[in-house]
Length: 402
Figure 1: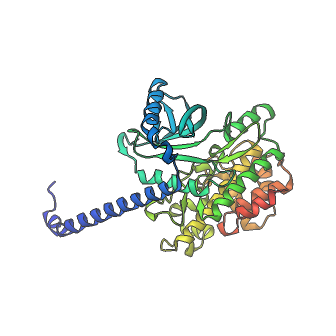
Figure 2: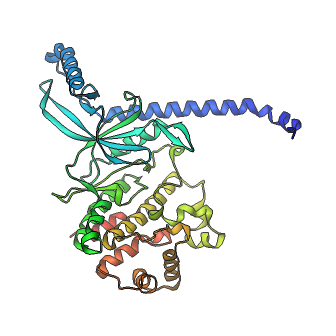
């Protein structure tokens, strides 16, 4: 089959313009990355020496390097953070893993072994296998994750980011976090309870966890940051103190995030709000789910973040349900036509008072236990098909607080 030479000749004048467009896009990305790195540097303060200790600088660096090599550690950020060359992996995702490292706190300008403490190190792979091909990851995404974590870390229920290193490791972007000994994610915590009770965690425990998680999300939302991947796996719980930490801001977005970094379809399917798949729905179902003004791609940046927050609320409701009952509310995801989602549509259209009551009697064929009517109501106020009718995370936190 011969190529259409006439069509080819018509498209050639656009080639130069296309190249200029690509060059301009690359220049904008470089400028954006430089700005993000500059902002991150302004947030992170590394240990510095006083004038009296300046002469010891070279000795300090040599000592740090010697110690790191001797102990089979690689030193980062002027020797403050140490990562084992072959560290055990304590967490693993599609594009990143988490290992244990060390942080050394200076004492009078010297690194002291007695001042070492354990840290968690998130290693975001610089290359990823997609479709059988190795694809380079964009550092801008990791920089943005670090920036949003730095903005949100002042809350006691948001994981504390201690430092970043984007360039010194040849294989990974590195994020250094506080380490919570013996902490497990909520999925593992819930699964451990199912084996003994048949349900998730007790209602009082679930509400305590939900209160802390709602406080963290309300704090983020007040900063115009949407997490966009709220789920059991993205929250840690310390078994000794009961403290809960919201983690993994890899998909988070804010008003100040470069729109080029937005990933509209993201998150975990069984936790995803139905409006995430709005483009795949019929016109009739689309009108039921969300108004035409809300799907306008030209809407303001604030409007987009507000919708992302509403999606966080939906995901939070699914998380609370999973803690209470020990299984996913939408196993195959509401956005894929799950039967449970059809019950939700029918209830909202008919004005039935309790979605979960209808769900358990008509679909699961068993009573809605072990949650009280008050807690069931909180779940229902999150899992509303019409996003504008969902409760805010601030109100949820207030309702869960004593």
